[in-house]
Amino acid sequence: MAWLLELNRVSKRYDAPGEQKVTVLQDIDLRIGEGEFVAILGPSGSGKSTLLRIIAGLVPATSGTVSYLGQPVTDTNPGVSMVFQSFALFPWLTVLENVELGLRYKDISPQEKRTKALNVIDMIGLDGFEGAYPKELSGGMRQRVGLGRALVMEPDILLMDEPFSALDVLTAENLRRDLLELWLEKKIPTKSIIMVTHGIEEAVYMADRAVVLSRDPATVIADIKITLPHWRERKDEPFTRLVDRIYSILTHSRAAQETVQALASGAGRKFTALPHVPSGALTGFLELLDDLEIKSDLYKLADELMFELDDLLPIVEAAQLLGFATVSQGDISLTPVGKAFAAANVLERKELFRRQLKERVPIFERIRWVLDSKRNRRMPREFFLEVIRKSVGVEAAEMQLDTIIDWGRYAELFAYDETSRVLYLEDEEDEAAARV
Ligand code: ADP
Ligand code: MG
Image (tube, rainbow, N blue to C red; front, side, top):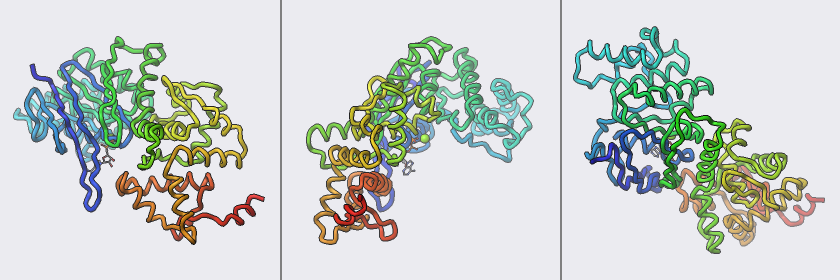
């Protein structure tokens, strides 16, 4: 029997004019059957929205195929409808009209459309608001309309792109429960739900399966069954254990792994992307870890800091990359160097940071070497940009260089002049003088 949805080696490359081609998705294989609620997790910018759009047939894949019930999808996918993070309502249409819009291409009478739309409005708890305009509604109610517009089409597959992330905590929780109830109690004919999210807890709370993507390019790095019975308790041990496990997988992202491999093999010549974290943020994070004692559960930490996973991940990655912290089974702990760093004074910290950078991130030694080899000990930013560009593409290169310069300046490996956009080495005498 054919799968409800099947992706075979789906890849996506964006060809920006005059730039390097960027491969966003690489050989994504995915089979989704009837009755499955699948969450797709991954770092921001990894290609989750792109993947959903390809499944919906809104964007073509560069290679590979998407099939719905065994039929390759060549145009808009007839089996799906989509709920967007931004709600995407028409402000000049009422709730009823916005929901009816989902049926505009259906070959049924206007009366039938109206009946269906009113039914759905009832179901999603907007009874009495049929005539209201979006601006009269709260965010939660607007997203209910977004959901209604998708559900009225009675799609086999409901696609949702971070549907709760623009809502406040309580509203989001409310809507999650209502949707889950519709799904679990089969009040909607939907056969499968695919939800993109960056909330691990949200995924473990709602879904039967978590598909985890890496980035640059995105590949499927884990596909985990979630068999806990509904309704799930977030404080329960099996729940938190699963959240920890997925957190671990996400924090051991491809970039970090590649860096470690490159270091281990002694190759380390090719530039690997750095997480975009200002040195000040990293410093603060290490101090915090030190204050929090030996080991901290990452997901609780994120929770306590009221951080989104997306915000915390790069910092964790940076701390790992520089050897200040290690992550194992969802717990983060400081290494001896990390502890020394947290306890050190300003100058000692710079010294430690410098040492870690030189040992673990080859680009810094290369920049030093280039500057040292020049008689005037100066080199324009553009030069290094060109070097990095070859590895990460034009757009990412600028941001990468910003991070490199920030870290390098903090470690006093080199100086940078913003106005002339030049990296340079300070004179030894000046340096010595400045330290006295
Ligand atoms: P996510 O939803 O996981 O945050 P996206 O799918 O939105 O990620 O984007 C993945 C990558 O593809 C990003 O680097 C983004 O800049 C790039 N991208 C997305 N859409 C386009 C486009 N139309 N043209 C070029 N690059 C794009
Ligand atoms: Mg997205």
